[in-house]
Image 1 (tube, helix red, strand yellow):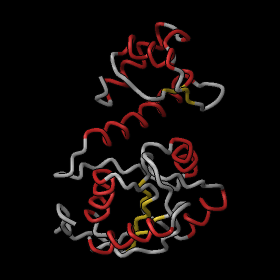
Image 2 (spheres, rainbow, N blue to C red; image 1 turned 90 degrees about the horizontal axis):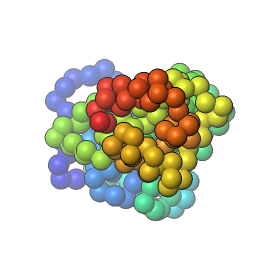
Image 3 (cartoon, helix red, strand yellow; image 1 turned 60 degrees about the vertical axis):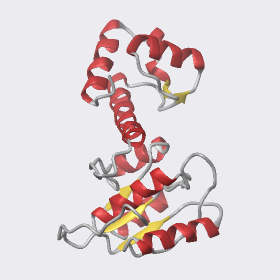
Image 4 (cartoon, rainbow, N blue to C red; image 1 turned 135 degrees about the vertical axis):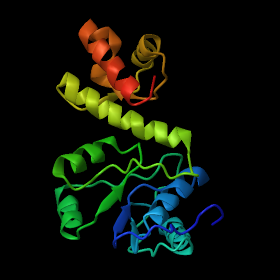
Length: 207
């Protein structure tokens, strides 16, 4: 694919499982670029849906010198497909000793499970020259949301796309998110919590 190259950096042998892929060219190229950057010897695309499209992505990985592993499936649509990972699947990934799991920003629940299990590290590298601001912003938003959750200790790790809550968030913090943790509706927060949220968002360069 144009715009991809094999990293000249000599790194130890690594295995990368790409759990989030999309037909949207920029997001797909970014995922491929990250995998290529780490010169992985095995990449695996997992998910559900149309095998043909997943196979196509596998070929794209192969063309970028990332050897595809088991191509399980792909769900079409605007969002990256969403593998449902339970405890057995996570245990299996850990047994297989995947060193890095690349997940996209729409997979908050899976990220929470995987991070808690120690099976996953978010890959926050700059894949320059593939700087896709929207994707990076999404990943930072995810990290900020996780920090907000730990800070505020909500009863449940749930998100809301309620327009009123999102409007409150925009008015208070000056940024637009499509979804926010339900516990982060500014109308439900104390001043000290709002101050702490501002600090987190500023640290993640979201303000």
